[in-house]
Length: 113
Image 1 (cartoon, rainbow, N blue to C red):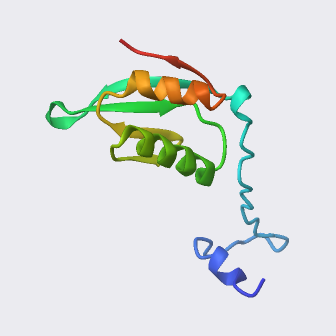
Image 2: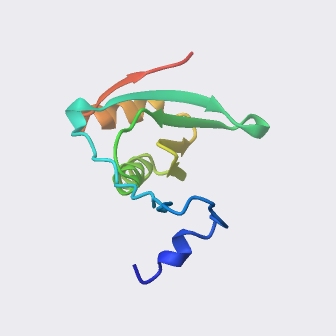
């Protein structure tokens, strides 16, 4: 409550005398266990003709997504990123990623063309 005024920076004025400002208390989404995850591994073409492997469908916290992305990137020996519920790995590593995810207990499928 010490920084309550910072939460209301977008609210300028209300004519309702009974108005109560509602803060959004976004709780972190609980990460599903690997056997309940339903992941899809896509091959995506980026600008300049580059290819990237994209893992979609992860349900869980951003920290767990980043951790899984780090493990996949390390195992494939390439760079990439994990954000917005997706893991993007540089290059065509679809088969390797599916193999790694299956060994880790995740349900995953190759998707796309």
